[in-house]
Amino acid sequence: MGRNYSNKNLTNLEMGNIEFYLNQGKGYSEIGRELGRVEGTIRNEVKKYSSFFGKQRKCSHCLNKDNCHQKYLCERIIDKVKCSSCKYCTHAVKICHIYKADIKCALLKKNNHVCNGCDIYNKCNNVKIKYHANTAIKMHNVVQKVSRIDTKLDKFPQEFKDYISKLIKNGISPDIVLNTLPEKFAMYKTCTATLYNYIDRGLLDCCNLDLRNKVSRIRYGSGTLRENTVKGHQLNGRSIEDLNEEELKRPLGVAEFDTVEGIKGGELLFTIMIPFLSLMLGFKIPAKTQEEIIKCLDELEIKIQRFFYILFNKVIPDNGVEFLDFEGMEKSIHEGITRLKVHYTHTYSSYEKPYVENNHILLRWLIEKGADITLLSADDVLDIINTLNNYPRPIKDYKTPLQLLEKELGIEILELLELHHILISELNMKHVITKNQSIKQEKEATISDKLIKQGKDITKRVSEKKIERIFSK
Image (cartoon, rainbow, N blue to C red; front, side, top):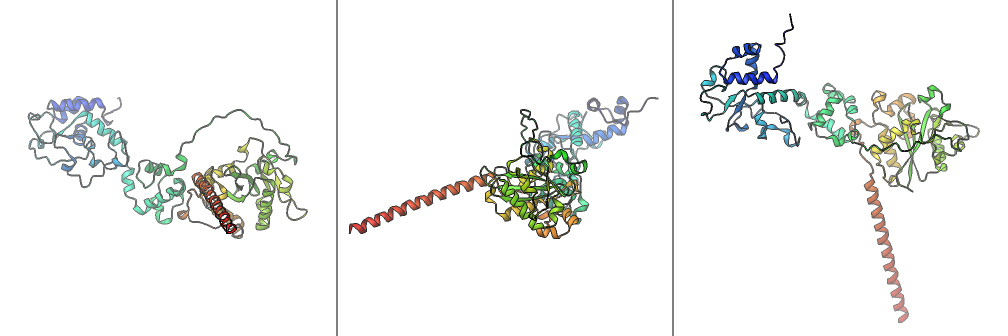
């Protein structure tokens, strides 16, 4: 025996045949025999997907207008804000499957409960119930497209929605928001893809513009191939190739060095990344020179004392001019001690120190590229570094770098580095300084300089006139 396919969904052709047979006045059992379907299937199809037709069909006449929460019924949604409620739309009523009017026709209570095949169909001016194949097909598609997440989100409390929207607006990733929920919201946890779906549909008080990773980036060409060469300043004979397999995995004691530039000629940030803890340290330096790098390392060695030799056993800088003096970086403030060993990367190979480069993406969330770092004070830089180190890391089981540092070396190291814990609800990953702010500051500075200069010229002229008057008398 062959397989029985009578339980499959009705096809578009079968829906057209149902309309044709209903217009001829056939009953459900007769239509079922014609199509090879069960009578209950035809009855449920007609009952569920029959539509109201007529000039008086309006949402205001619907019996369900007070409890209507239909959204996005149309196939073409122009604006999700305007289309958030379908009961105010004149087009949505044509395909709404929950529309119900007060029908008092005695003929509808008999036979098939639809107006198909009625003798006075064209003469009747009331709202009609008719099974129309094209409308039924559209309603089937709507049922398949409309997800149940709307009703699921309606069950969530408004406090939970506001909590999620606030964190996403502050620049926190949806994945981190869901995996760091407080206990009172743990029961409402959903998957990350569903939360992105909520944001796409405009169901939360945030939008895709608040998601940095969704912003499209221009892909530039690879350009010409550049060969890796060994610079002359690598006289110490050590490069990244000399690290063993365990050290290449960045255990505790291996760090990466780099610098972050704001504007040409301005001050910079000397950044140190400890991949084992996902910890970044940053220090403001006035110029991109070897002396400033060595000075920062000396101050850091004095500041954190014995912890320096635990965190910085081997360091990996690039081939920048500021890292030329490897002897100065390796020489300790205590005589006769080598505080660290320098292993240079190859030229044009930023991928050999990926942890510090990737962490600079987070840093650029707070300091926009092209912003003037000179405008930041030492306290501002410390706040930025503290914010970065309190951002949970998915690769570290959603723990913050400061939590990992405290677990590894104790709370004393946090006090020495002047770092402290921040709750994720109080974390703000928005820009501290932007490129536009830098340009505005420069314009204000030039205008103030001009005004001062003009003022000096005016006072000079006034004083000269007074002198002339005195001598003329």
